[in-house]
Length: 491
Image 1 (tube, helix red, strand yellow):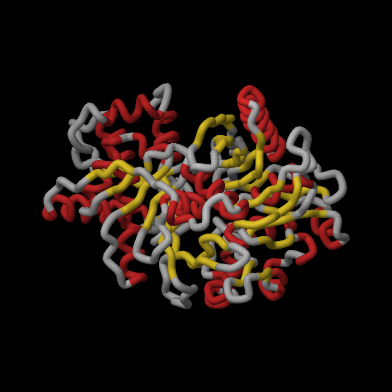
Image 2 (cartoon, one colour; image 1 turned 90 degrees about the horizontal axis):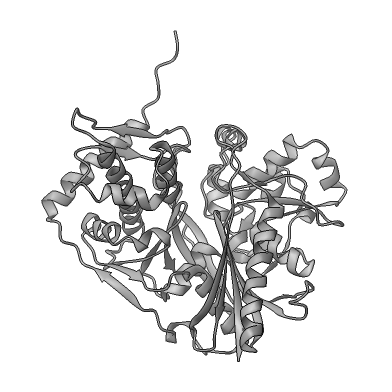
C-alpha cells in the first residue's frame, strides 16, 4: 500500500500523518516545540529545533510504514504562516532565530509605512493591511538589526523563507515557496501571482533572497534527505488554508475557523477585492497548475495561547486543568478577559491594545476568570464571523471548526450559542495535515476532485435565546473597547 506523509509544522508542535488512498489517516506522530521570549513582544523559535521535530515525526512515521511493509508515495507540508527564517545559501545554517508570526518587533517598520502613506498600495496589491504579523516587516527588521546581514544578502549569500521554505530546503536543498504562504508575506502580488519588485524595494528586501514560487498542489522537488531520498514533495500550503481544504469548503458562503495558538477564519471568494476599508485580509486559499482559489481571512492573535498564558498565571498544571476549572461555574459571573497581550488582530488591527480583565467583583473566583478565558475565544470568533458576513454580503448558515480547542464540547456549544448558528466540528483531529495530504493526492491522481472526499463532523446547535446572546456580546464589545483606550500622557 502507498501512503502520503503529511508534515504539519505548527507553532507549538510538529505532526506527522500517514494518509491512505481512501483519504483515511492511519498513523500519527507528534513532537513538541518551545517558544523563546527574549524581551517583551519578541517571540522566536530555534530553526534547528523545528527541523529536529520534523525529523522526529518523519522517523516515527517511517518506522510504522516499515513495520507494515508500506511505501511513501509523496510528501505534503502544512505549516505555521508568516514566521520567517534566514539561512546561509551555501551551508543551510540559520543566521538567527526564526521570528514567529506572533512577534511584534517589527512595529516600528510598520509605523514608518503608515506614516509614509503606503497602506493603500499594500492592500491593493497584497490584500493585506499594514501589521507586524506579516513576513516582509520581519525580514526588514532582520536586515536592519542583524550585524552584517544586509551586506551578505546583497551579495547573494542569504535565503529568506517562511516555514514551508525552511522545511522544503531541509528535505531537498531547494529554495521554494507555495502561493498560499507567499500571499502572507506582503511581498506577493495577488494579481500577477508573483513577487512584486516595487514592494520588495519598499521593504528593502532583494528579490534574489526570496524563494522560487510554486503552486500549492503540484511538484515541488524530490527529497534528497535519507531515508526519504527520491520521494516527491507534491504539496505545500499554509495550515489555515490546508484546514479549509480539509473541511471540504469549496464554495463561497462556507466559512471555517481553525482554533490553534491563534485562530483563523477563512471563506472562499471568486476573486480578490480592493476594499480600502476592509477589516479582513484577501489571500490565496491554494493553487493548482490549472486553478487559483482566492479567500477572505480574519486572523486572531491569541486564542489557545491565551489559555496557556492563563494556565501559567494561575499556576495550574495544564490547559485541561483550566478547562476543568472553568466547567465548575455556569458562566463567567460578569468577568471578561480580553487577551490582547500582543495587540488585537482582525477585525480591529490595533497593535497598541493590551490585555484586560474587567467586571471583577468580591465574589469573582479563579473559576470565573478561567471561564472568561474560554468565552473570549468564542467572542473573538464572532467578531471576525460578523465582519466576514458584512464584507461578503452574505449570511453564513453555519461555522466549520477544527483545531485542538475544538475537542472541548463546552467551547463548541458556547460558540454555537454566541453565533446563533450551528457549529460543525470536524471529527478529524489533524485537519491541516489531512488537507495538505488531499492536495498531494490530487497531484498524484488518487482522486479526481477534492469535494468527493468524506468530511465527517459533529454538530452543535445554538441553545441561547437571541436576547441573552446579544446582551452577552454587547458586554464583550464594551470590554474590547476598554483595551483600546490610550493611557493619559505622563505629566
